[in-house]
Length: 218
Image (cartoon, rainbow, N blue to C red; front, side, top):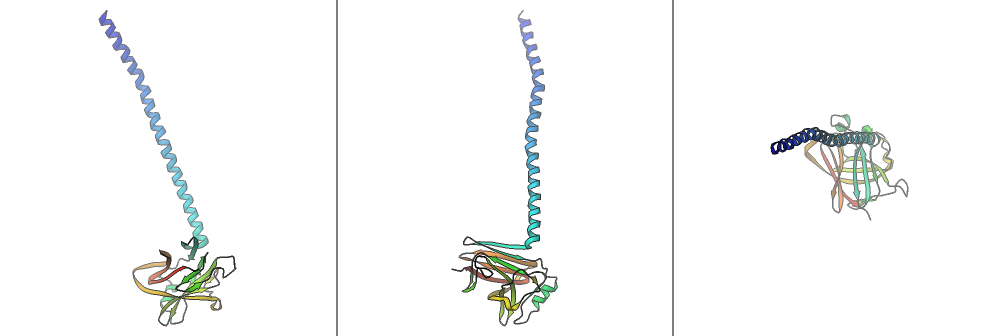
């Protein structure tokens, strides 16, 4: 009788284990599926977000070209500029400028500044509201070769092609610090360097580097 009881108990346990095994396998498979679904969804969401960001970037470049942006004292500054290579007539023209001559951007739109504040370049003020009293300062920018170096001309006509500068609309001219760079750039590059209490405008192209420090004007 005792042997029968032991055998019966063993049989019950064995049958329980056999029945439980498929259920455990199903639970593990379900767990694996539940883990993989969110990862797949996250990947799809990430891909969709990347594609949307790429579309926004293409639209931005079509609208503005290249952009340099800065927030200065809570005010936004933005410079848009074209794709210009060193292997171009524009670059060769820059290098061949004589004293008193101003560059042009014949292969693209003029370099454009939009500033929500007046800017002071060592006391020389580029004024906010030059186009309209309640509108940001808007200018096209043109490097100029001087007798002893370089300067940057701010012209009041901003939305023009790079070959259409009107000298009568020149508003302000500020000195540029020029140097030869040991890291030449293949394309025209314009950026703002955040340096307290103001910033530095940097223009690099080929072997040339131009710098102009400024701050928000009172």
